[in-house]
Length: 240
Image (tube, rainbow, N blue to C red; front, side):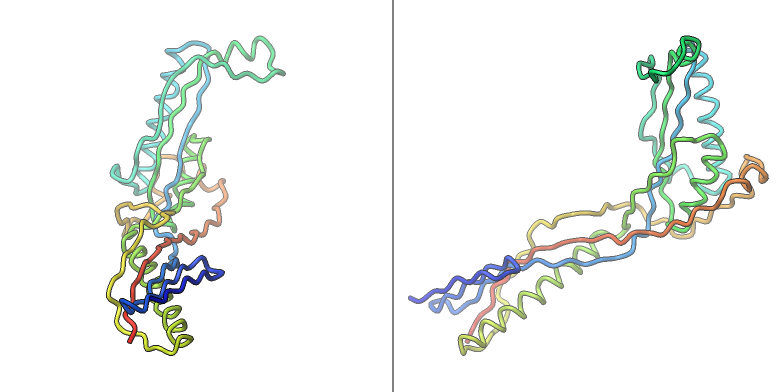
């Protein structure tokens, strides 16, 4: 029995066994796509001297922000709460005077994740900030069809595997045969699944916040990021 083990700079493991006449290869490759979902963080933070008043002020601002989003064209199904709560404030600036601390005894925080097409992300941020959401702007870029990108990455890895196997077969003066086994190992996921959002168009001019108030805020230049999906394939080819 003669067997060979070859390791390449690409972390590929190639095994050739002349008894069963196969070449086994493990390869990794990736596929990329431009994000089609922008998950925008929209949030607020309100301080107050007593709990009831702080909660009331936070609730009033919370309703104003959601109303602005709704009237700008964002549906409830695209808005998910990610955190909310009222608590006693323990984080003071060392430079705060006693009268300043007295006004910040309690803090109410609330945040949402607003999922929109990339072209609408800037408007979500603008109308939210205009309505008082001053903890807003972080974006998590996502892809709606994660499985399709995974399949594309696996296909690229398999093509790469055949190329390496073919090269090895030529070096051993044998002919590469058919693929007889392939396994797609768990990919290193960097993207998330979410519902498609095609057709959603924001209308900033229709928001409850005045057009003048929105107009004074600059329009941000936001471009979607590229997301990647990685796949590792273990493939066994026959040799003749």
